[in-house]
Amino acid sequence: MIKYNLKCHNEHEFESWFSNSEEFEKLNKKKLLECIYCSSKKISKSIMAPMVAHSNKNGKKIEITYKDFNNEKNQLLKLRKFIEKNFDYVGKDFTRKVREVYYDKKSKKAIYGTASKKEREELAEEGIDLISIPWINKDN
Ligand SMILES: [Zn+2]
Image (cartoon, rainbow, N blue to C red):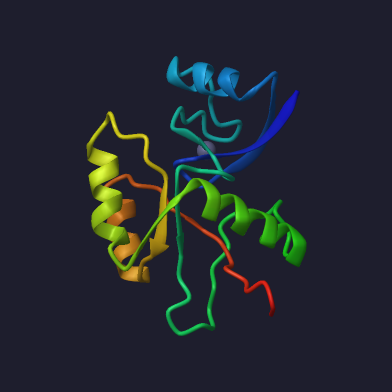
């Protein structure tokens, strides 16, 4: 069994258990998952989403959009390692690349990079969900 933190398109977060990650994908594709608060069927995993953005342009304000992943440095480092290993870094090209990935249904590329608040809002209006994570330095 595996527990996922799920999020609907109205930003409600809840947890659910699955026998494995394939089960989640299968149920979600068939629209068998729904938000426990608003019955939305637009559900995504709130951790390990295919797209990740971090906004620390000025190095100060960093937004965290999921709660259960608490601020422990080790966990954040693990998450960072996971992303670096599995995601392509596209840097400031992020907004453009995200659209490429999003509108090309066949593409399963996972990318990460930086986006401004305004860019993220524009993407959100187009239905593209991003996850922000605190990007901490290994030696910090
Ligand atoms: Zn909801």
